[in-house]
Amino acid sequence: MSVLVTGAPFDPAAELAAFGAPGGAGAVVSFSGVVRAEAGRVASLRIEHYPGMTETAITAFGDEAAARFSLSAWRVVHRHGQLAAGDPIMMVITAAPHRVDAFRAAEYLMDWLKSRAPFWKCEIGPDGEARWVDATAEDETALSRW
Amino acid sequence: MRVDVLYFAWLRERIGLPREEVETEARTPRELAAQLAAMDDWHRAALSDLGAVRVALDQTLSDWDAPLANAREVAFFPPMTGG
Image (tube, rainbow over all chains, first blue to last red):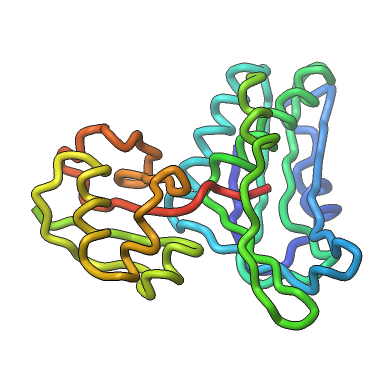
């Protein structure tokens, strides 16, 4: 049951090891997102967020996921600031008695993080040109399945 | 009443400010956005098309026609792109 929104790099393997298998979990699922190079079009990514609201919103999504999917524990880590192609952006870890719930909770959290947590991505091209990433209809549609 | 108005991402860039304090009689976020858009060209460029903007009252996402009530902090920003 924890959220880390950080401007510093993090190590997904270390996060997963530290999480362990709390509460006698029978299933632990983790997902980590990495900055895509987009065939060389993206040199780096700048992520802006809304301090305060970010943590509150993610905690609400996590609490909802825990109730819906009987989680024994969850953790979300999300970067802000300057990232390079290949850097981990974010990570979701869920623990539940059974794997179906752990998988579904991780997907649920990912869908909500993408469209309802106050983060904004700005891609920086190899020429230094910056452009804000548009939200996609697919991300919005993904929420409707829950 | 006085409210802290916050801007993020391209709204912040277009307006040229991350936050400002505003005196308003607006009853809804939509009325507040209209008041701000009338201030100058930069605010108008950011807030003229509310279909491309989201709003939060005291750090909770809100509808455009919800009561502003006694919100202290109103934030305008583009659709979120986390994850």
